[in-house]
Each structure stands twice: as structure tokens, then as C-alpha cells.
Length: 226
Image: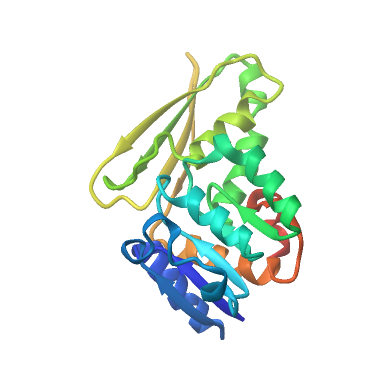
């Protein structure tokens, strides 16, 4: 399979490396060489099976539209653009392409979401919940997409408003913590990413899964299949 990785940052570079290790032909396109998605022409994308985007919120939508216009399936790990989900879904359906997006492509984080869901009864026992997330100083969106999913899980069917506190510091890969507090005790659930390897491997597995498929998918709904 031929994969084009958009973004040559730490996660994008590791994604291309892992794709090679899994037997694929992977190319990387730096954002500086793709101003305004100018490099994503139908001719450039002709031989590409799946495009993986790990860029920035500022350019991801242009990348998505260019790739969909060329009829290419995509895996998008960039966050900060989810207000446009309805319009992107409509474009994917119009183009009959395949598209996987996710706030986090780590299998560990998606297992963590299941633990968050299992902890919802704490709210009915008058525990106060708070979400904390820490990422590297270069991460531009806050709160993180993962923290937003945690909040969505907890607030679904509950009237309680769950606050998120975000920290941007140093080279932190990604830490998400859910704290339940009561006068009697406290409960802590935490996922701490040691490296970007989990994100990269999940994205490559998603690319393998979406090749040849049509439809619009959230990784948290299909991760067990990849």
C-alpha cells in the first residue's frame, strides 16, 4: 500500500517510519512544501492509496478538501477542526470516499475511554469530576480532542457540567487525568503516553483498515477492528 503522510513533525515522521516497518511504501510531505494544500493535486495523489494527516488545525481542512476532491481515502489525526465535522462528512459521502478521524489513535487511550465510561456512576453518588490534560508547549488547540471526548462521555445523559483544565508545557507527549472527589475520598484515572508510538501505530492500522472502503468513521468506534 502507498501512504502519503502529511506533516513531518514528530508524530508524522514516526507514522511514516512505522508504515515502512509494516511493509508499506510511505512518503512524507512537509507543511512548508504544501502551502495552501498546493501540492495535493490529483496528479500528485494519483498513485496514493491512503493519506494520513498529522498537521495543524490551520491547514488540515484545506488538506482534507484537496484529498477528497482527488477521491482519496484519509486518516486524520489532527484535531481542532471538529466544528466542521458535518460539512466534511457531507463531502466524504458526496465523493464516495473513506475517512477515519479521531481525537486519539492510541489503542490505550480508547481503552481508557471505556474506563471513563465505567466510572460514570460516581456522578450519581455526588462525586465532583474534573478533567486535567497536559501536552507539549507546541500543541495549539486546547482543550485536547481527547479531553473533549472524555467530557462528552461523562456529560452524556448527565446534567453535571464537567470542567477541563489544560496545561501546555515542555515536551509532554500527552497526559489525561480524570479526578472524582468527595468529602470521603478521591478517585484518579490517568492515561500517560510515554511516546508517540501508540498514536502512529493506530493511524497506520486505521489506514490499512480504510483502504478500499467508503464511509465516515470515528476511530473510537472502529478501533477494535483495526
